[in-house]
Length: 108
Image (cartoon, rainbow, N blue to C red):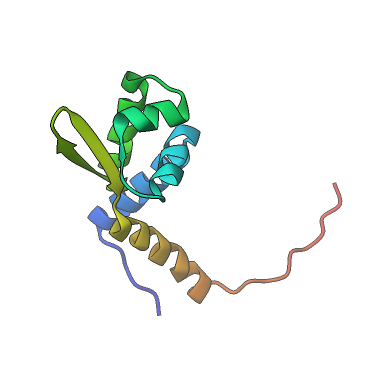
């Protein structure tokens, strides 16, 4: 049984996969798996300027993959796990509904 996805959900799913397709954003997500991090620490770990990282963090925020928290003059980021669950459930639907056939060998 297939379920339909709302336009809003579709937009967030597309934004999530698009955001994860960039190596820097993927690296940010990998670092945040261990917990909340300050922008300054993310910059240091990844080796990019704060202005470059800000662009990538904005994309991750718009995709609802990360959540910011301001403390004083610093912003801390953490993963927004419910959005990762939504992406996982979207992919799981394929596993439940698509018949997997053995790969055919096609000589080149």
